[in-house]
Length: 267
View 1 (cartoon, helix red, strand yellow):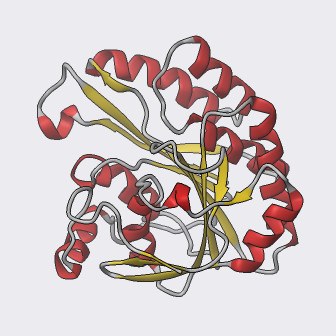
View 2: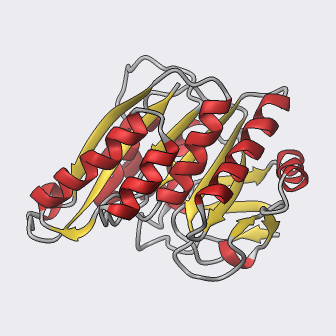
């Protein structure tokens, strides 16, 4: 199956040439690269969140496979949906799904189910792909979406991810796609987002999950980030570093209703 772009021309430029130029504007040249166990990267329109995503992708070594976990905004599909085979087509190229890793993930956890429907119109993973294709067109991907689920399911999914990554002969990086606070003032977003980011930096998945829930932080990808942190801890992560934070107000000039964006590298 070929999964066609769902948000080209909306979240990013639809023309290959214009998209290449758009991504180039956000990539930082001559930055030292490092292996990343996991990432947090935003998924808004590139004009708003591209600087944050570009800062993250500029700093990582290219693995053989990216496992992408994003929130399910559409409500279609199963609670934890993987697309286990096929190709994702983008204006600037195509990326093949790593069927071996996808199959192993489903074997490790019954919570992870093969479901194409969840991926057909979802943007949270698609918006990562222009940056991945900028790095390399030879990598493979494993796309997963997650609806709001319990902390226990986040742990189970994270442990499955860690087991598969450990077993893989190739390098794998886990990307958790998330924006931060939605449609609050710039000052409120920064205050609330810091509480969530502090838990990410502390490599504390339980603390992140509970902080976002108890303090009403509208971080749409808290579930994917929680699962990624569980996996990262199992894989021996020693630290997480905030690469860049900003809000949409810095682009739009509207500081009354902003969305926050954070870029984090876990190593």
